[in-house]
Image (cartoon, rainbow over all chains, first blue to last red; front, side, top):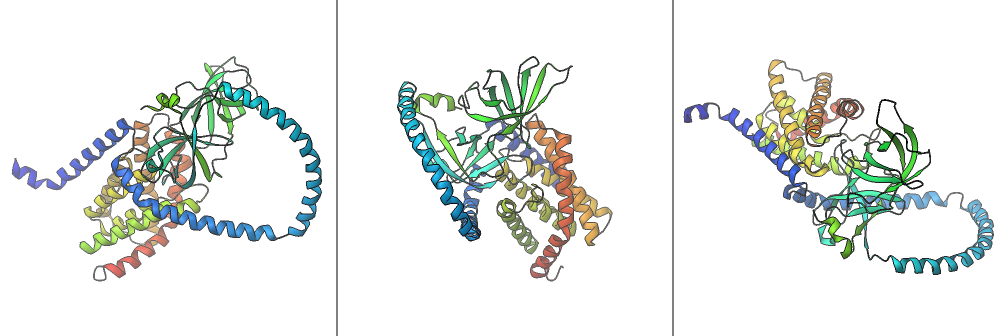
Amino acid sequence: MFKFISTFRLQFLIIATFIGLFMLMSQTHTNEGTSRFQSVVQTLTYPLQASVNSVASTFKNLWNSYISLIDVNEENKLLRQQLLDIEEKMNQHIENSVQFLRLRNQLLFASKKITDKIFAEIIGESADNNHDISLINRGSNQLVQRNYIVLRKEGLVGRIQSVSPFQSSVQLITDHRSRVSSLIQRNRIRGLIYGTHKGLEMRQINQHANIKIGDRVISSGLGGLYPKGLLIGWVKEIRRQKHELFKTAILDSAVDFNQIEEVFVIVPSKTDSHLFIE
Amino acid sequence: MMRLFLLALGLMLIGVWLSIVFNNYVQFGGLKINWLLMFMLILTFRHSKLLIAFLGMLAGLMMDALSHGIIGLYGTSFFLTLLLIIQVSKLFYANTFLAVSLAVFSMSIFEGWISLSIIDMFEPGLELSTNLLTSNLPVAILQGLMTPIILQFVIWGEKLFLRDLA
């Protein structure tokens, strides 16, 4: 037996490696959390990513400031004219906004939820082509936790997938694993947003549902992960086939995922914390 | 052997650097070149040592940590691809730029197919054939086109580290 093992030790080593790798894969897939190995690699690569990102941003800003100096005189004249128009409009808006603020404060008082936002910069993205993951420069040291929601003012970006001390990975809603329960804002028709790597699709819409191109799509709050009312996008195209039970809407996402540089991580209030328990 | 190990490790670290920094700023048609895989493929084609296959597995694990959550996915696909190369390179010898480019192209497709199949196994919903055509194939072509440059770099590294072997 020992002789057999020693004769085929190389083959045994290779088979043992494969078994080890499959066990590792199954374990990390079942746990769906941040593995220690991932945390170590991300912690080690963070200084490099953060420093390069910082240098690149500085150069980008310098270049942009140089570009903006060109044609500055003509732009200045145009802006002065626009300023006069805007001042006139502003007077009207001030009057409207006073009224708006008063009414909004009344409404907020009724449904107040204390949530903190953590500002984060995007410092990298997934190393492969198969996943839509972005890396942000906030991690467990800044109290970021798995499944926290990531937003921009334009709309929903994704959720925190894994956390290491200095950085976290964000699973974008365009990732093929992402599912967001959603509804059409106009008539509350429900569907499920699937990430398709290239964009977003709202599937499982009733075949007879009345949806139109340009309809706003928001999160429905079902499922507990994403809060209700976050803007996801607009209907761009509707696909339906007679033999299918459901129809599909192709969406224009509210967030331009190729352009995002900063995001907000939403820290849920204590009353919402049950939503984030794994 | 130790020198080869150090060279492979060095190239692996350069691959990691290119993957996490260079790929963020330079993408061809929105596609990211798999630098780690390229270095490991070229090195295995030139040396056919099991050691490189194991280092390739480590490179794959690093790729896993830098891309998604399932640790071991790219580790398996890299290891399997490099083992296949070791067997293939026993059958014929080819070390010209064109031959290595074609070999990198075909092996990139093989690795992509393996990794996408495993992803499909763990993460249902992935459109395997679409991904193979729209992502894996163009990346394999890109990697094939980039091969001469990387091969030249690897040869330069070999001259520096393995003077007596190169």
